[in-house]
Image (tube, rainbow, N blue to C red; front, side):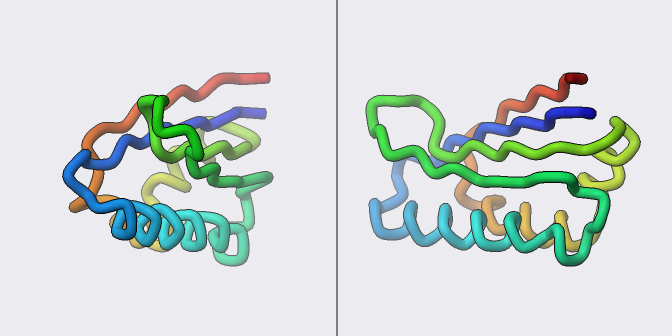
Length: 99
């Protein structure tokens, strides 16, 4: 199995209201993906509640292989969901590991 973890930081200039709107829209879109991408074994999106921390969103997902991770990244439904963060994202960090 491959664990795919992605962290996102949103732009500081976003209002608190806009930040939560974007974060929740992204969460809902990503967590709906198993309905259309059947090789996702698990996916969850956590929204940071601690403003003292650097990252705003944590995506945690599981796949059988790295090929599935790559197929997920290119899948049109994932691309559409990921685009929600496009104009609001400051940075992204990712790690993929076998477990």
